[in-house]
Image 1 (cartoon, rainbow, N blue to C red):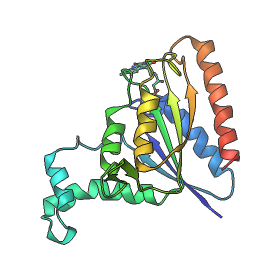
Image 2 (cartoon, helix red, strand yellow):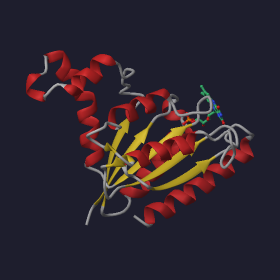
Image 3 (cartoon, rainbow, N blue to C red):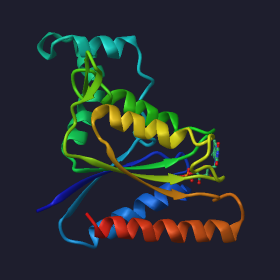
Image 4 (cartoon, rainbow, N blue to C red):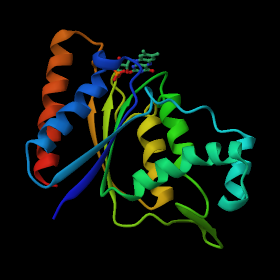
Length: 202
Ligand SMILES: Cc1cc2nc3c(=O)[nH]c(=O)nc-3n(C[C@H](O)[C@H](O)[C@H](O)COP(=O)(O)O)c2cc1C
């Protein structure tokens, strides 16, 4: 059986991005094995605008009643939702920028976190509608934050994934990347090993 993986990259540093190096490690390992089909989505190269009232409005209009402009706006979310639905494993390569996720990645979440599509409101609070998927977060950071109060990034990502119903999430950290060459090399080596093990287990 084939496992489908959607790899999202979000570094603004293109080929120099360390989170992209983590994503590439995953992709290379996955491609070296049979049975893993990788799709890539670079949310920086194909950057989305901020979500606004016109796009939200387009979601409320039935597809056959939309104007050409509303169709184009709704297509942002529809394309990304279709990609998400067609995957088994969501891999998110994420740099830490200013203690949070890149705004381009937030713009991606703003298109896939949709009431009635990926979650619904109930009397007991929101309920995820995305079933049978898991996530792997590949986190690249200049400093060292995992497990501390300043790591608002991982809980935010897990909460957004959890809202959709994706609760099986594994995080690989490459931290201290701007804390000297030795530290960086060791962090990347360790992260690569963790990625290899995760791919082996797919
Ligand atoms: C605009 C910007 C903001 C950053 N902010 C932080 C930060 O708040 N905390 C941190 O640990 N590293 C920070 N860094 C360092 C990055 O996390 C580090 O360079 C990491 O490798 C970025 O991933 P990337 O190389 O895939 O873009 C920042 C880097 C940039 C370019």
